[in-house]
Length: 408
Image: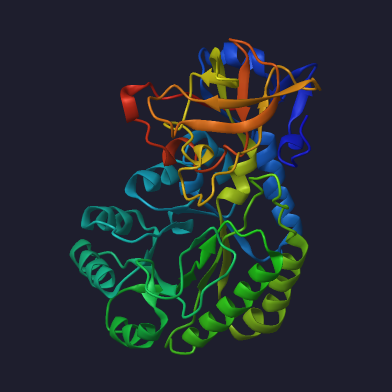
């Protein structure tokens, strides 16, 4: 198979890719149709185990449900991680349907509606408040329900983290409360009947640079320690964010987690344990946990040549995998790892473009890629499909049916 590190994580049965130990041709029969998403539970379990081995033992691991909210995936992870982070009432319901205790479910994100906040207060989850207005609404809801809401303040830091796919901190942001406003807000909240646990900071996502992540962790800890000094109560919760990236493209190098774990251990030893001994320290990850565990499987329905260019037309497309088409944040379009799933190991290659079934030139899943000769009925497999795949795509576009998802 390809030398891409994520493809190498999967096995092959003879000439066929296998997911969860099941060959693709058999799995397609089991699912009943293409296209579909398949997630390998052994890879998810292995990734959590790897994180546990590299991070300090007393740092808690939270799964960001937004990365992949498939109920079976969330159920599986609820038994492996220490907390779940949600970004909507629907995700909160998914999390609360698992064995995870409500107090270890956090609810972040701007624009929480009053209805969502009522559900969160009633459920007893930790609300990571993104504005002073939201804080006032939460306090009023708690007073009306006779429940003391569990809350934390999401902080918009006064610095940016370089190298992130999406920057979500520093400068003006819809995310979090500007750090310079936090001390005054803490004074106001002292009179409110809120169980204020601590702070959350998340500065950016999809970062492959260990040195930058180490610097961000150091700055986040320094920032949160400074804010803790303005609290009149013990800080019991510190969410340091995450942002660990995975390699999507040919020249990407996997994140070296060793120095990140070492920096976090040093920060725990010298800063957090001595100064904030009551704090439950959390690293929040989504894509890094599930992204490389999933594949998107689609079938060739036509093979055509147009003025010398070979097109493999498949029954899937950007309505299921927007990110792989290059239309989900890419400035310059690059191909995700892609193979002909039932022709693994074949060495005679041809230059083709893999296009979806939608009536738009944007529906391009592989542009000028070298693949084995594929015919109608063969499987095209796109990797890195375990995070921000189906739920981050315009599934209603042109009215095609939703693809199944399976955890195997």
